[in-house]
Length: 373
Image 1 (cartoon, one colour):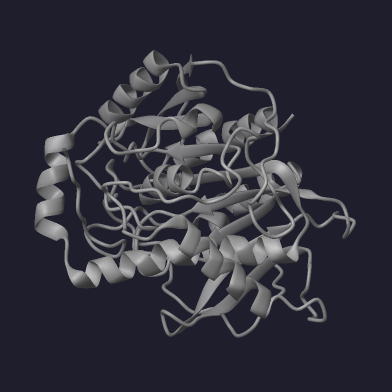
Image 2 (cartoon, one colour; image 1 turned 60 degrees about the vertical axis):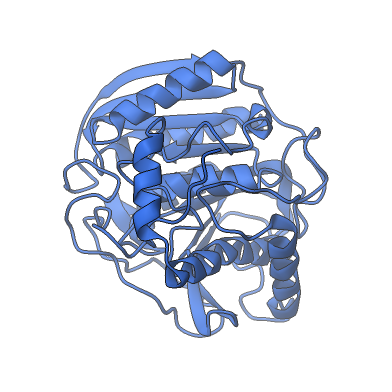
């Protein structure tokens, strides 16, 4: 049996391209203390391949393919935490033990229970920023990490304060932070979330890669490359950081679910590069949360030891640039999803690794809307 161990943590290797703008944020409604954590990484080669350039690089749509049959709106499933219940009706009622060979040894039931206990202890209905609207820089105290950890939260400014809202979580690429992608290209992602009425939340993924160890060249289908990477990279220090990174993602999600009325069956996950790998990993391991996922330019998933049976109920929007190091892996993944009848769509645009992001984001949000109808 293939057993993948660990690669480098998110700060290792070359960083993903940083955005063309600094992480300045918009109007801020801060939680707890001032945000801590790294700033956007320096521009350079992408950890997930492709030449570095501004994320505003142009390009044109190249190819769209559809695999399987896409549902037009998924029912809710219980057990998703907070006031939300998102997910599909035929999924388990909540987290269950799940092993993904290229991830941590953490098990979802314990991770989710810990996150819900944390959320219950810190969400205060009497706080000034309770259920605040707009673009917010929040922090929470992560005892296991011994740090106040930041996350970004954007709530539609026209929300009435009572209606349920859909939620979109974004996982950033390596060398960046919770604000980097949200601030680039004139805050394109924040604007799209506002226009589509989503609560947008972006965790830091504390000092790791969200629990996933797959990186280039271990794209879909490259099992030997994955084994080789893993054999060389796993250390106790990396394992500890990856556990914290994975827990941080679920902590932040449960904090938001405990505070805001998130709409049943309307929770989606997306990410770019290293964050695309995190989307595959968190999306599969914690599939009971998600009603759709959108991994961008990062086919960091393998056919073996992954809960593919669950993904029959989680529509997938896979996107890639034509001038990236991961394009062959994305095309192989596209073919695998189509052959298996998975609910998926594939979009390829003429762009490099960072330049594909602004081109596909509008399509990502449109896809989420179609899945939530």
